[in-house]
Each structure stands twice: as C-alpha cells, then as structure tokens.
Length: 146
Image (cartoon, rainbow, N blue to C red; front, side, top):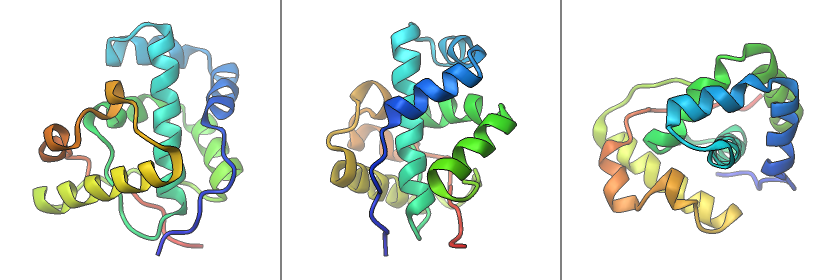
C-alpha cells in the first residue's frame, strides 16, 4: 500500500536545501557533470524520489543518476536529516542491496509511482525505463513505517 504524497513542492524544498547548504550546487555539478540549473533539477528529482520512498510501504529504487545525486545530498547529514523530518516525518534511509531482478522491479514501481504523483519523470535524470531498469543497482531504499 502506498500512502498519498501530500502537497509537496520539491522545487521549494530544493531551494531551502540549497540555502542551508549552498555547497551542494557545486558538489552535484561535479558529481553529475551538469550546469547549475541541471544540479537544481537533480536535487528536485532526488526530493521527489524521497517523497515517494518516505511515504511508501514498499522499497523503491532510483535511477543511477538520481542515486548519484542522492549520495551527494545525504552526505550533508544535518541538512538531510532535517529535510527528511520536515517533509516526510522520518529519516529516509539509503539501503543498497537486493538482486538485479528485485531492483529492476522496484525501479519500475518507482517510475509508476512517479508518474502517478508527479507526471512524467525528467528524462535527463530518469532516462527511458527500458534503458535504465537493468542498471538500477541501488537496491531497497526505504523508510519503515513509524
């Protein structure tokens, strides 16, 4: 069962995160090889993924590129924890693992939920499902219900 995503503006949350930790812009630019606008969009995509993950009762898997951006964000532990608590009511853990088949299925579920709650995913960050699903190797990224 998936709880509905409450009104969540990932662009507003991304701006708040960048205000609290401006170095994230440079970190994402370098790690993901994007311009400043692309880094902001990457943060938005991570936050949308976290919204789905933080409110879902099933494990989800991001695209490899979203996962790379998430790695940069999660390293800012204080800001990441505060963001999770504020928007999702709990810490959203990053828990890599699982079989390739399980991760492909979770990636497909992630895209299904993304489309349901946010519309079409940004192809620069999510790619085409058929191309990225076999590469999704993050594993079960989930936050257990309180």
